[in-house]
Image 1 (cartoon, one colour):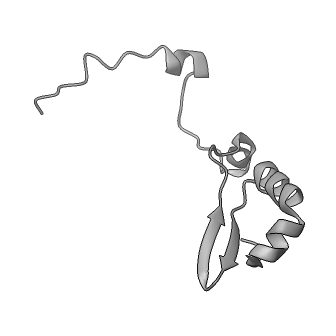
Image 2 (image 1 turned 180 degrees about the horizontal axis):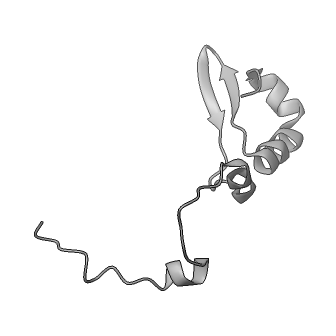
Length: 78
């Protein structure tokens, strides 16, 4: 997280700061009168998922995985 900024700094650079939060997905902390506020994107950025480690072990394509039915294996009473 970047260092906190004051409300005055936010006012001076509001559009740049908002664009940066939206572009990077990184939360920005703002301090005002001893209180802390956070500027947070409402939806996560998908590109953040690209840096996650790949998992081995799926022996199917994504389409096959999406089409998989678990109805036979799922038992709500267990």
